[in-house]
Every structure is written in structure tokens, then in C-alpha cells.
Length: 223
Image (cartoon, rainbow, N blue to C red; front, side):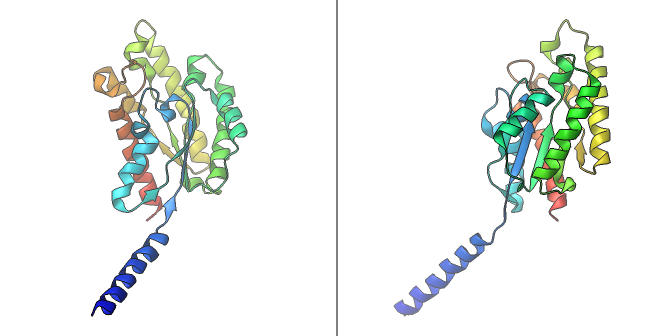
């Protein structure tokens, strides 16, 4: 009886080990600026990290996300950082959110369009050439935050909309996914719980809203 029990236990352990070894573990690359690195947030509160946490109960397992992002980066600075990091082209999904600092610094629309197309094509390459595994997130409107007090909020909104019209058009042209979070970001005008302590960047609560939308796209693509 003891020998049988030991044998039975061995079979169960090995069966579980077999199942674990065959569980697909996905990889996420997220590139961008302060909105991707989650300025002022704990790592677990960043939207890429929250996305992974949201998917886990559904049995969709990801490694910790690879993040190439820094507060203040413009499109050209992000490109330079990517070239320096030289990530492999073996990611299952890629997110890209970039452009707010181009708008903030008064960079030209033409420069943004050119750089964004390059970054979008790079993102598709990192996603093993699968454009449907690339998720572009629109630029939020920082003009509604307390940080923008005394500035021309209408002008900021118009410029953000213009930059977003470009990234949306180019995203659709290459058949990647586009998530428009800009209307959600504008809710911060009347809800300060959506703004971080620095009175400029999103809070963990707002990042969760974004993460839910990103998770839905990933879940849809993996069905």
C-alpha cells in the first residue's frame, strides 16, 4: 500500500510539473514616456503591470513587462533609447504611447508623424511582425490637470487632438490596435482621484482604466 501511494504521488507530481512546463508564458514590451513608466507610481501601479495582473486570473500569464520609457522623452529620444537597448524581436505584445512631450515642447506635427511611423514599424517588428499584437494608446490631455493652471487649456486640448489624429491614422493604416484613452483622461478635470500627487500625471486609478482596455485587446487576440 505504501509503495502504491508513493507511486501515485509521483504520478501526480509529475503530471503537475508537465502542466506547468506547458503553460505558455507571454512577453510584453511597453515603450513610451512618463505615462508608460508611471511617473510617481509604484511599479505594480504602472499600466503595463496592471494589465498583466488583470489577465492572470483568466489563465493568461505574462512575465514582468519589459519597459523602455522615461519621463520627458520625445519621439526621437525614445528611438535613441530603443537603439541603445536593442530589444529582441520576440515579444508577444507591444504597447506604444508617445507624443505628449513633442506637443509640450512645441515640436512640429511633421516631425511627430515621421517619428511615429518609424516607432510604430519598430513596434510591429518587436511583436514578431504581427501588427495585430501592437497596441497604440492615445496621448492623454494633461491640460485638464492642476499642473496646467494658468495655461491655455483649450490650445493644449486642440494640439493633443491633432497629435492623436496622426497616431490614429498611422495606426489604422498598418492595422495595429488603437485605444483612445484621451476622453477618459479629461475626466480628471472634475475628478482629482485620477491625478497623481504631482498634479500632472495619472494616478493608479486612471492607469487601471487603461490597463483594462489593453487587457481586453490582448485577451481578444489570444482567443
